[in-house]
Amino acid sequence: MDYKIIIPSYQRSQIINLKTLKVLQEQKIPSRRIFIFVANQTEKKIYLKTIPKKFHSQIIVGRKGLSNQRNFITTYFNEGDFLIQMDDDISQIWELENISGNYDLKKDNKLVPIKNLDHFLKKTYKLMVSNKIYLFGVYPVDNPYFMSNKYTTDLRFIVGPFWGVINRHLPSLTIDLDEKEDVLRTLLYYHQDKKVLRFNNITITTQYYTEKGGMQTENRDRKIESLKSAQALVFRFPEYCHLKPKKKKNGHTEVILKDKT
Picture 1 (cartoon, rainbow, N blue to C red):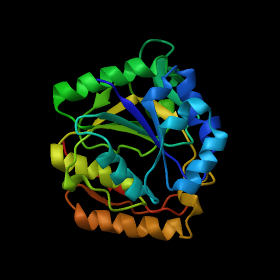
Picture 2: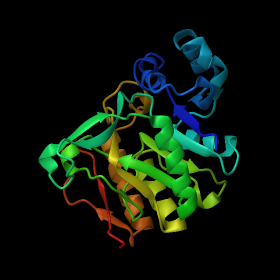
Picture 3: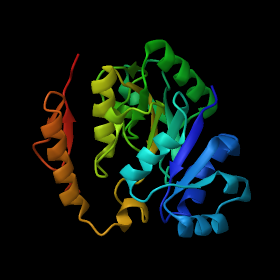
């Protein structure tokens, strides 16, 4: 098993250096395992000027648009490859610790930088293979109080900034939404396999909806797009999800996944 870390990036040639690439280098992940996907040749030239030379051979021109890029990445790599996709603006990957050794005492929970990302990914792959699971993710919010020292395989949200798959070229897993593409992926994989793996003791720090570049460059109202995508998901998967009654404070419409246990 030779995992590959995939970073789709658009107009964030400085940010990727300061954040995700910095985190991966601190974790001593070899550059040969890291692939950066950009939208076009113009973007590639910019990235070649700003990121370290050891990554230059790993910059690949894919497609513009998040869903287009995700689908391109799937077909670019072989079936069976273990692909870890990370956003370009991750400032830390955390794991849960408990100062008392009793994870039921939530007040004693704290977050520390993950000790060995390479070891975590290799263990994850073995767990996925042994349980015939094809999608994994981490806890979506970096708040240790709500986290637990457990993993789950039921229907749980697999957040978009950090997730991985054992790659398959299945038309049924094609992503056709940009907004809420991570919710769509969760539902597609759960519908296909009846399992998704989530580590509730691992999380990340990132900037949702606010970091310059990426989808923020598109001339669209993301609040309107989030409503449209949420409605489309509920229409398509009524057995798995419903709309959250109230919008988030930032005005985005959310989808609630139903407990299928």
